[in-house]
Length: 254
Image (tube, rainbow, N blue to C red):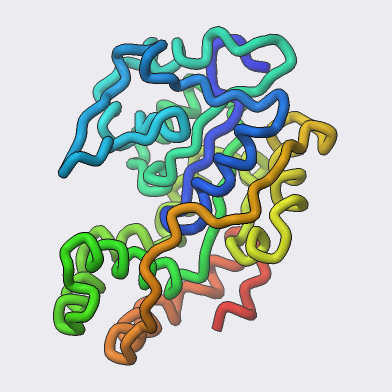
């Protein structure tokens, strides 16, 4: 509905169900993810180990990521031809960790953008990330390697919800955000998608068909006690503040 800016942006969190939400929203009439690589040849197609770093059209990764060198004019051009009556946006979970300067620039260029995030129990989120990295390295059965991965800077930063949320709240008003939990999607995704539609400016009549199967399910493995102890200690003092910031009921997480 905006003439030259995204109507919505999903900012996180990684390994929490953002791809499932993307698949659900992209099948809702009136929701547009316009970042098509063949349409905008300036969007990065960089690869690491054969994997494209940005998964278009879901995520552009402009605030942080492989497309951060684009100009604001180029980024906004992606959303410049949204059909009348539709809403356009992207879901880049790496944005949760965007630096303050980039968030300020987003507010300057897109002050009315609607933001949302979905959060997973942080211990489950971290363990999912650890398993994914370990599987890629062939170390899933190596407990010492799992412990090393558990304390990687990237894993720690992506599991920190509180500090990034505070940074976003310093720039955007609380009313710009809609927060949800992975548990809600697991129980029944339709109410979650309907709430998101309302948040981004569409009613429940735009609800499309929602696939039941999960997306990007990681390898199945029980978390070793040694790893779980690290994760419990890491998150035990942040949950109350997280609940206060988001208004989410998370008592069942622990």
